[in-house]
Length: 365
Image 1: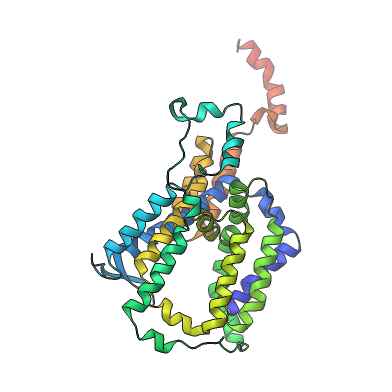
Image 2 (image 1 turned 90 degrees about the vertical axis):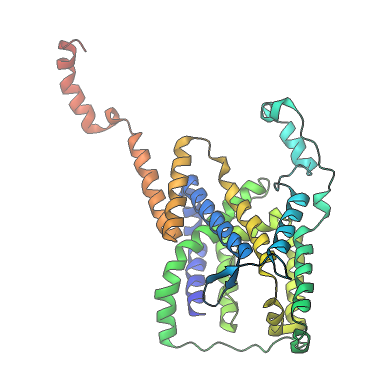
């Protein structure tokens, strides 16, 4: 809780002072894309492990290969995977007529159509089939089938709220060992990447980096005192909501109402149900969220931008540190900008060039 409060305080100050807006404007897009790509692939790699192997989340390790049959078997996970692909496809907006008309209105739009053919609309109305919700409900049903005894463990009514008591050692350890490594990732993935991804998905709706940063700070400054899990507006969450049909703030409001209802109705006893949720289905949902986030990096228009993005992503994935990848990406971006400087435009170069011009002319250059 001390780590969450420390991180929240930093994000709140960055937003309230306007420094977050400065960072948002001046951090190069290829570096942000590298962070998004690394986070998306990291989610996807974890999702594949969830699907293929049993998981020991307490030890953060993968166990034996998942059996084919059973209520949390490989066959169930693969069926869920195929169902999502059949319903949502690649996650495009072919079913969105407004986006289609906007695309067709562009003067160069015909050149981007494969072989000059119009894209056909799928016979499956994916916008009307809530794939993620159906999988979640299926997982809940399987929870009770796998362990019927959890019905007796349910307790109706919200859990009691109490303020978490934190010692000076809690603050010291939480800040030094958790908050400091987390702050760069929170700034990049919870604010900068969220705003960039929102601008990509919803270009007609501007999102303020200041508002996002202050929002993350405030909700943790309040919730962590009562033992709430530190939360954020993560780019992975936004990508997942968009991937499974969320196109407006109403979808998030419905999600919030559902979570509030479950929390008020069952309190902490609901964790007992989630403990039996099929991990294979969880892996399928995480896989598509990660892929959607990683695909945000497909807009790099030059080889140089792609180079910076891929190096940033590779360092982030290899070192398991988005902050390290971010630092390498910024350094690489500055080095590439330095190569593009015109040496003859520098003052020292001009003085040297003026003195050496006659020699060059005498040499016939």
